[in-house]
Length: 71
Image (cartoon, rainbow, N blue to C red; front, side):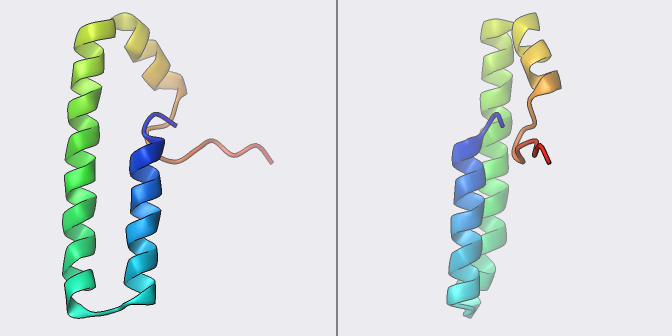
């Protein structure tokens, strides 16, 4: 997965939402998800500029957030 830190933060904030289902956490969760998605996309653009085709190939075989699970 290309952005494990953001995936971890998605899970962390989801856990906070489940643990403390209050109005602030209900509002905070989608705002944080959008912010992390934007950060990840910006990092993707920067990596593409820096590494070019090598990054494109890496991105084709590596999921952005969810790991490929081998069963």
